[in-house]
Length: 62
Image (cartoon, rainbow, N blue to C red; front, side, top):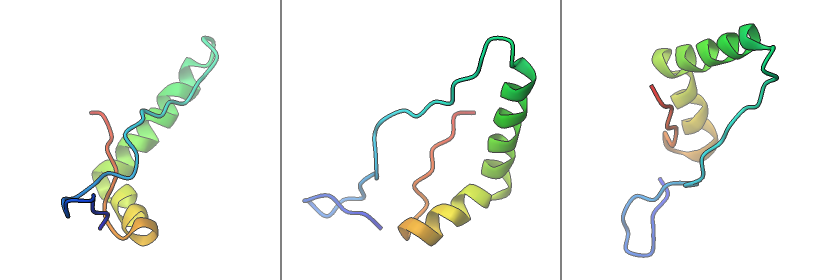
């Protein structure tokens, strides 16, 4: 788990990340959003995060 200088849990990054799509790609946008939400819901994102960062550092807007 990542810790700050005071020993408290720290996040890996505080920036927001986005995926850009053409306005005409509404179908693709929905598919990507659906896949990300499904990965968050079924624990896939958490498992990947724990594997590579040692902790679940995912934050997915609902």
